[in-house]
Image 1 (tube, rainbow, N blue to C red):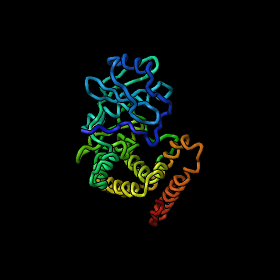
Image 2 (cartoon, rainbow, N blue to C red):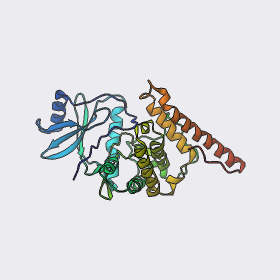
Image 3 (cartoon, rainbow, N blue to C red):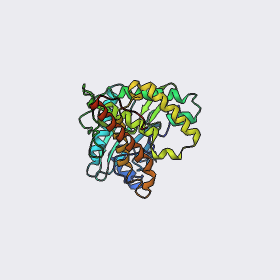
Length: 312
């Protein structure tokens, strides 16, 4: 079974960036805290911050999450682990937390290394249908949204983006949301999802917030500009399959949820693109268009006239 790189760089993480690339002293400290042998093989496993390493023990690979405790970060790290436990308890294929420890410098956890390939790698390896991979992604995300968020997970709506109007209650605002659901964070093995990774952005909220966020990642993430035309076509097929696999709600996302997703992405990316703010201009226009559309729909509802969904 081919193992994939399961710690790809999150497109937008709300966690502060500070490198934890493994140095000899760090590795010694972390392995001792986790009661792992000093000779265990440790290597970076990807990601912008170096916070995930790959460690081998008794011939078995594990992922090792390592963060530097700072105000707010410890709570988010605990939330990530709690989110994975909640999703795993519901039967979803997520990394299992094997061991946890804290050293004078780090908080660390060993989690299981999952089988399979990322959706992106599966396509590169010759999977026949981008649409089918998208369907698998959509169905798995819908299953996730049936899971109640644990108490450790924060609300999705914060000061970065105003809450969307008009979301129905029915107990759905307490769902577990991933908020970074894209082809690098979902693993597949054959015709099934074998893993859901990178829980840095896990939050509590209405499922439509996560759906809108995924649509934005498929549609307007500035990182998409680096894709070739052929890759963009494949991504569009994945997105179409994702909407079909998730169900009707993914095909008719409320305009104000899309406005929220755009504002969230702008807030997340502001620091990364501080030196190139023009790169975010298409995202600003997209977000503004959905904000205008949401306003028009609200006005139409008040007057009894239908709105015109044409912003995106």
